[in-house]
Structure formats: structure tokens, C-alpha cells
Amino acid sequence: MSLLKGKKILITSGGTIEKWDTVRGHTNLAKGTMGCYLAEEAFRQEAEVIYLHGYFAKLPENHGSMHLIQFEGIEDLGEKIKSIVQSEPIDVVIMAAAGSDWIVDKMVDQRGNPILETGKMTSDEPQSFILKKLQKYYQK
Image 1 (tube, rainbow, N blue to C red):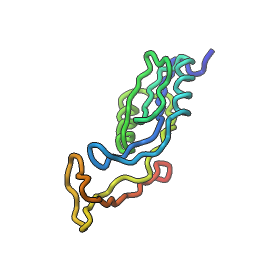
Image 2: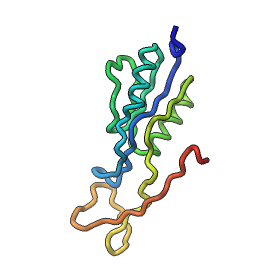
Image 3: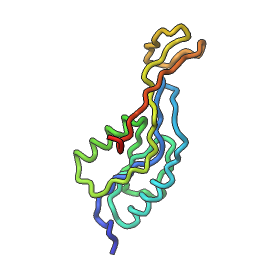
Image 4: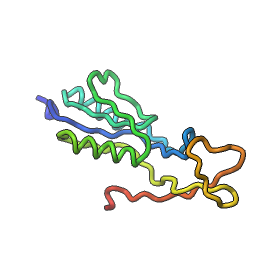
């Protein structure tokens, strides 16, 4: 008998993408392989799996009724985890995602003026980014 049968498991997997504008961002190269394999095995053992995955993450094969949810940046990932664990009973959480260490704090042009555009930045002039270090959840 499987220890996971009937359990509800939340698995995060893959890397985050921190957007600069509507078409650009920085990411890490995490492919989500470990999280994917864990999700496949839990599903094979008849667990109810919620697979929270990054944009470039490997998706489980034959995921059937597995609940797949895509996230973007580290803040989006945190909000989705919080929403899920507050709204439904989760038995196990496996955090296999590779979260970003940095997010964009502000962007400035070559003269140091803030860039306030909300759409696609112009590529006519180089931009400068000021990044903000994120505190790791396990450091709190």
C-alpha cells in the first residue's frame, strides 16, 4: 500500500522569471526535472498532486487529473503557494522550485532618470537596472 495514496501534495518546480517589462526579464536555468519526477511518482502512488511550475519547467508525463499551475516571478510563486495552502487542506509541500535571488527595484535611463513605462521598454537607448536582493524564506 502506498503511503501517498489519497494525500494532497503541493510540489513547486522550475525557475522563476522576473519581468523587466512586458517582453523581457531575467531568469535562472532551472528546468524543474527533480520536481517533475517527484510529481510523477506521487501521482503514480495515487496522491492528488498540485504541480506549481515555472515557465520553462518540465511538465509531468501522463499527468491526467494532476492540477498544473504556472507561476512567473518569486512573488507570484509565494502568492500562489499562500493561496493554495490557505484554501485547501494540503498534506505535504515539496519546495523544488529555484527562486530568484534578485528582483528589479527600479530602472533608470542613461541620465539616471526613472523609467516609468509599463509596456515594452524602448530598445533605442540602454537601460540600467537597480536590483533588490530577496530574503530567502528559510532565513526569516
